[in-house]
Structure formats: structure tokens, C-alpha cells
Length: 216
Image (cartoon, rainbow, N blue to C red):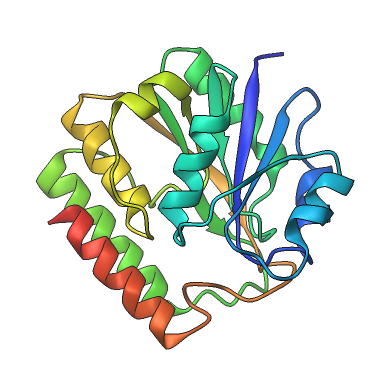
């Protein structure tokens, strides 16, 4: 079993975390990064056996970076803590990295009944088209589930600390000549809480601006 830490950036995900943590593959370590939660996220994480790191700088990128820095295993996986993605699909991505890929990412495939807004799908498609055309990276999703080697990931020097982090990561990976693989993964509704991006107009606007900056 490879040494893997699963980094879970969380802001008020107490309702969804139990299901996510119980689905972490055997032998993997769960590391929850609490990004100023007020709903007891950290306590829930500890009760379910996860290590917890507090990151007070708000933002998805800040939480992910803190988790990768805190990880001590050779391989790190990053996964949302909202239950929309299944941690049991991580071993396939880990296997790709073990086989020589620099990074493996999950390409979301909606499960039956998922309400995935057309504008969100269109935005993702447009961003990935730009990544392929401008940066030559043959990806079709913005890597909400991803696996890479910890030290190499830190060496990329991703600087975005908000929602543009995944896109800057992909841009820097392309510039560094990384080999990136994709696998289809199920994408379902969040199992608790509220989306910090699509759940508000402000969140959507911030994400759109961060995405544009990252790929420009």
C-alpha cells in the first residue's frame, strides 16, 4: 500500500465529513484543513480519526497549501470534503502516479439525478479548452480530485491562495512539462452544507475572477 495523505480543505463541512472520512481507502491518512469553520468541522474530523490542521488565511488555495505542507507522505491526494466525490476512487489515480505520471486527476462524470448547472459545465469546458490551446495540457476538468508527489507539487510554487489554485496548478504543471493523466470519477450532489462557490453570487464571482487570472 503506497504512503498517501488525503488532504481535505474544509469550511463548514461537519455534515458531510463523516461519510467522506469513512470512505477513505484503508492505509491512507486523512488530513482535514479547517479553514475557519464555525460548525465543529475540526471536532467531527478528529472523532473520525483524521488529523487536523488549522489554516486561518481564508481561501481554497490557502487550505490546500497548508495541507500539502503538513503532509509527511511521499504522495498527496486532494479532495473536496463535501461528499460530491468518492474517496474510494483515489487508488486508480494513485496507481497512475506510482506508474510514473507526475499528476493524476479525476474527470467528473455526473451521477444520475445530479443538478449540475449548465453555466458551471460551460465554464469548466471553456477553461479547459483554454488550457489545452494556450498551455498544451490535455485535460478536460479542473482537477477537483488530484494526486501528485508532495515534494514535486510544492516545488511548482503555486501562489494562488483562493479558488484559482487548481488552475494555476495545471498551468504550472504544463509549463514544467508534467505528465498528467485523467480518469473518470463519479460526481454527485454534496451530502451536506452549502457550496462556497456556486452557493452564492459572491462566491461564483470570486471564483470566475480567480479562474481567469490563473489562465491568462
